[in-house]
Length: 532
Image 1 (spheres, rainbow, N blue to C red):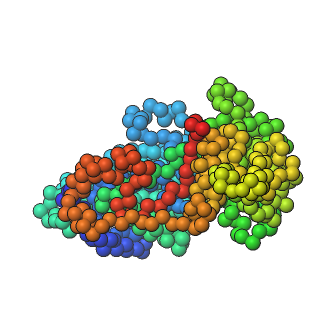
Image 2 (cartoon, rainbow, N blue to C red):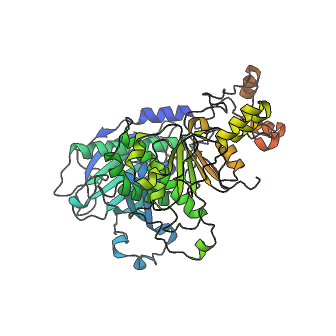
Image 3 (cartoon, one colour):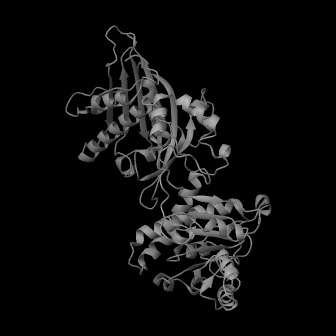
């Protein structure tokens, strides 16, 4: 197939590519790929409708992000990349276990070598695996191109290969594309894509290996067609906290707390869902606070620390001395209290309250229970408005209900009112985790107390506490017709001239929806309010 411009690559191209994908099992046929002195087993082959550049792009991405292919993996850590070391001078400085395993393929030129270590989600169940990835290319005399990618795990036997990796000594992915200048080339010309195994002598081919090969073949075909169709990543994750830091802390928290929390669960809700979700939020907060504040001391949490805590033991350094001390946190609508329990156990002082006491609270240590309060939050602006329009008696009653601010943790054990007006000590970090009716109030409460906050929304509510879903903005029929007649660039230019689609041009904080259902952000973070 000749090279196509982006304008020519459309949904039809992708549909044709899907039709071209017809994997054929070839395990019983002579191997179509082999190396000297190495027996290989060919698994599947299929025609393919994506050119070499798309295949190469996808394979590099899968090498750097193996979690795309396996939900048992967190990420890959890259220890060596020959792209940054074309002369191979740095290999001798790498630890022996991380040095690339040599490999030569007759007739092929070695384009790139990457050594990665795959990090599992559950290190108690699976070990990390170091793997060498070689990328080869061969250009035939007739103009056709062969691109070969080899995965070689650093494992001497099948028993050393973890569950998330196929139990094989090596994998090979071969993409062949005919010459674009061939007289027989046309818009329907297809390439060939295949996957091959080098098996361990002690581990013959089984159903799981066959299913894995087909799954990998399908995944690579899908992603390559997506690249050909012009796919670009629109949502970029891990912008606040690096992925590796969050994942490592989350793994540590799971190991330290998950088993006991699940075993002692007394609520009717599923423990696994709530425990692991709260541990994930705790991991994010711990890493965020690590960047924002100095490490807490052993006395900061007022006796709520755990022997499992590693953060408290962090020695101060020059960077730590430049950070402010942790101001304490408050979890509004704390629910089961697991988040408060874990954060305090990690050495961070704070407390939480909810309109209804939970049975889970009684399962925590006294030092934690003392920092979980049953109280209803009535925002201070409500009481101020009520005071301005009510009688003297009513005003006095409202003020009496809401004068206590529950400024914990110093007086956490004192008797408190059943109401709270949402005013906290300045700088208190406000946590609004699935706070429902309090979610829209969270930024305002943070402003009133000059506090940073994090809001993780769930069900949307308005300021009155009623369930609310913002209506979708749909363009008028005339606007649809006009947009259909104009090209994308013209529409963007016109939008800029009119000040549409960009909040800064219109004075609006809302992004123009263009008729698409704009989902609310799952995470809203304000570092510090300096205008109160």
